[in-house]
Image 1 (tube, rainbow, N blue to C red):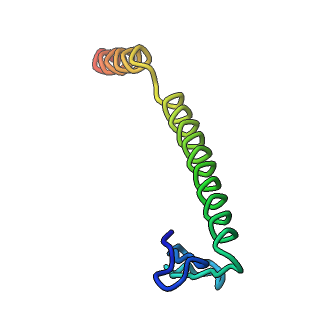
Image 2 (cartoon, helix red, strand yellow):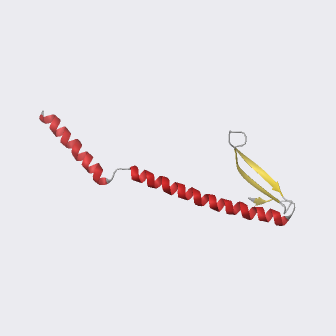
Image 3 (cartoon, rainbow, N blue to C red):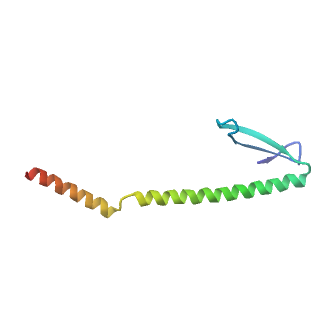
Length: 94
């Protein structure tokens, strides 16, 4: 978010806009009645961004844990290899 070059009561920011279903990258300008209100908005906007980053990190960590839990352990992989080799030896013996 950047302060508007011609006004201390306005902020300019770019983001994805999904208002028309299909996303597009747009630039927006929001103007306030006073510089104080503009700065208050910016502070809240940045707080929301920090909260969202925290939530996204938690989701990412949970997904990584699920992926790790779904992976077979090295012991299980070794056992599967041994069983496969054993089955091939039994097939040859018949």
